[in-house]
Image (cartoon, rainbow, N blue to C red; front, side, top):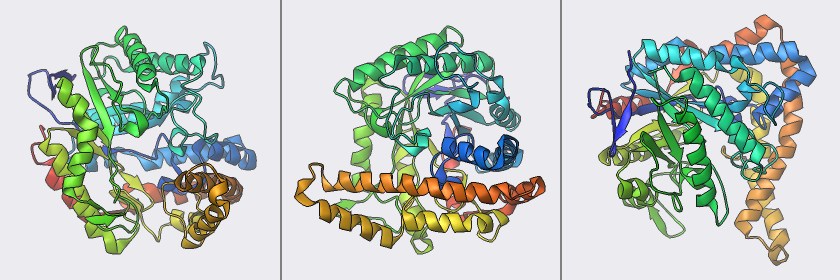
Length: 464
């Protein structure tokens, strides 16, 4: 049975004062669905609304419930534990707790705990910890798809009622899990992005108030605080203001993307182990200064070019070695997907991959997913538009290119969502179950090179 953890100095400790490193995998794409992980276009809330409008709420609910029950099961936790992991990070969308009322003092739905309770029970039974990560917060903490944001505007930082809803939800969650030792702690907010001269002050206020409100209910659990700008920046952060805090960064290498080798020189800069150390210095100076624990909550690499697999493995090998040399906890992004950057992926010949293939092909051709590389023809089209804008456009070319890709991707995604929803609406309930069973681990493929690397690293001073 796991026991409550606490911090002392820069270490995370068990009750007997032995050190533990929280190292393992993120369960991305499950309770916070992401387009490149499972293949749908756009954002989760768009997907859910479109399917409900095309197929009816009953059929849509059946589809999503079947997905949630297939994607993560007990055998997945058993497999992760067999690698030597001590933790899973569980990203979730606040909308699981929504009752239809975003603003004000409306109640939260206890059904939001259904699958969280299930995975925590598996963790408890198999001696694994869970970190609960609010991946999408009310009002959106950043402008990206992974906060379930199709507005491209982050309302959370400007609107008090969204901040209040966020804090109240954490109080609700803390009350539910305050006596659960299999929960290592609460990762308050995934990848906040606050581009403001007072960013540090605003983050400090929200973190301090949220922690204060959680602590009135739950004194047991660690609370994890993410850096600004997608977990990269701790400038403006105040010193640790209470006990049992762990600070968290994310670290995706410049060479993590599709088709890139490692090491590699880009625009005259060599990206290698030495450069990686310098990048880490810019993220971990805060925890060194204040002697607090660091948890690298996300890092990873794309495996979409099979001939570049060995380079990605070497990249991740160097990253994990760097984290472990500095005594940091870490969780790899991600555990399971449709063969982009995961440890376990759907079989290319599976029913699901055949079913979704027309949509995924169109997504690549039309550049719908910001994270996953688009087709060359689409990239060339965007480059032509950027050149056309020329000096008459005040923003940088890089920013203009990004906004065009994001805007066009959203327009195309909405059309593709209609197509996908129409296909799903034509399925029977047994058909839905058959297709989504492709996500069961027994039907999936384990990336052997990555599995070997994780087993090796997780057994090196794992604190288990």
